[in-house]
Length: 314
Image (cartoon, rainbow, N blue to C red):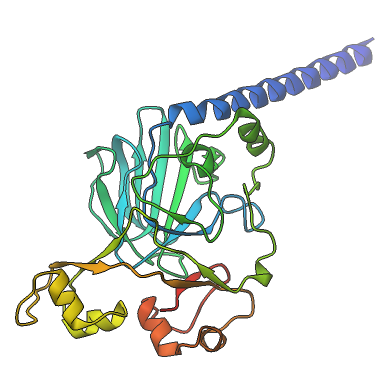
């Protein structure tokens, strides 16, 4: 009799556990379906090219990577309060922002942070500059979204494309631009497979040089003059002439000072996504450039590169 009662109790506990799991999954799915509505006014945090998406690296990559030029401005996607702003061995310079819709966003690998913990920020505010700090293999922004809050295990992570819109590797994105809408069917598919890559281009091993044209809205580039730079060195960097720079910016006698913002005619740039087995030497041969130029254009201090890293080749 006692044995029968024990078995009955065990069966009841198992049924209760299964029910709780089922209800928890339904709740999570409902929350996921609400996210597009909660983030309908969100904007992209940076201009650049998508180099990695959610769910890659055997499911461990819980965000989206956007690569651009060193010190590219990073913007907050929506109003919120800075919950963390510090340096991490893995995230590098990183900023966490809690939003009114109870979502928390993460902006990692920054060169510099421009906000402090407890600070209130408005949508579009510049919170930092793109860099290559922490566990990073190239200049880029690693962006994450979490329900309620970020945790070490990242169990609350949400695929950023649900909030921001479609994103595939090699796709250019525009800072401050609002998302594209998704259907409930698409969102449901994302919920069922965390490693889904919407519109994935498939086998990257067959990719060569990926063209990332400057979007139509971006007819010019802007460059902040750094210490040691001259009109001549900046002209070489952007494949233009000193005369063109001087005329475009009303500069006389070639005089520029640190901090000046120069407007530069935007030319289409060639970008290359690093494949397994690539080296700077092999990429230089493919793109008809030199290792020195590749390192200068991409602010590389060593010859070490990683698969899926994006390199500017001219």
